[in-house]
Length: 557
Image 1: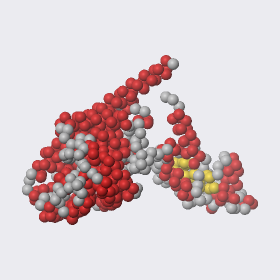
Image 2: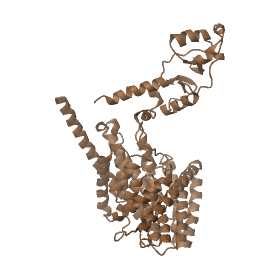
Image 3: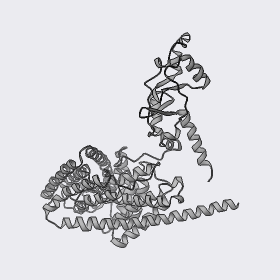
Image 4: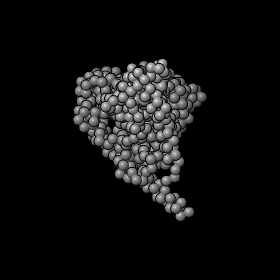
């Protein structure tokens, strides 16, 4: 009994320590995001927007050139921010790489501070996840294997909570975004504490005013709810197209040389800003796009102009991503949704159409569909306006948008749902089931020796053919049985082995190995390091590994 009490006491202490570290993660992230926004928006972007129109139009070109140089020399060549959180969440083999963080954050300041058409939340999530990863690495002894990503999630929740002054949105987003149809488990309390402490810290610097303050409560009729359903359909289809365009832009940018792509995309942004200035009397394609929401909320805007701005903002986002800009997609999705909602509101012309009702319903639906986070989309509309009356129509639009979104997502690292215990084994490195002591035979072995020594003596159905670490193929019982029994003493393995059996490298995962064996219809997969034979992976070894690991998990600490 005393041993049990000691374990419970130790568990209680560890839980309190994790909660404390979650609060520290949130506070540090809130302060870091406040500094990031102050430098990027107040000291750079707002000063740029106070300059002449020609300087504003040239800003995105400067942004992409600066970001390209920073990413190339300081950021490790990568531009992922929010995607890096999702990728790291699912990578159980290693923690988030912190080396590129300073370079990527500097590149995001350059991208957003000089007018790139991306959002502030991507770098905020990335910075929070990095802070959480660093703290968890520092106090790793307090965390079990199942909690290896808890402060990573806390940091991501804190980043969203701070930049949008929306702690509930931050919590729900961080738990929803790793999966398309599921939630991260065992993270609710720590992530909630981190989001709350981050919001309080950020609000101490930036105040508590909602991101998009609106007055009054949004009145809506049954006709408006029908309009919300239409918004959901259009936003689901629009978000599907948006995510495909985003992935296309990223792929094109990844294949193009760094500085030429920055110049071409930057010049495209300049031309787009010139067109926007000519049509709207202000370069609405420059910057993250908060000014687009103010523009869209005006009930006097023509629907045709709203649709035109919708396409121009999509193109601006694609050019910024393709040109190597560093930022988030949360706000671009919000802008697209607001413009879709504004266009539908202009068509319905109901009592709510002239207000912010339809644009904010569009925000919930488009954001929820684009990142596959319907709950976060609904919470964002309520928290960012300070009006919970948007929740009911937002839920209708967001859920309908999910149906029309299909399986697409703004992040390629999302997975559908949590994997079962066997599926999680598949992500282990191949070396966890590698057999290096597997008996082999040289190619000049006779079929008789193969049958008596290996098939009957060692009970092997398949034997790798190796000589001086050089791999030739695999000999199976099927090939031996195809040769007349009287010929076995004279026939050599080299003339009957299967050279078409696939092989893999030690760096592969168990999933890769199992899929290769299934496609080839074999139970053994040779592993080669270059041309040198290392060992084999067998289906029996994979199943045995799962039994061992499952028993280990069931054993109390």
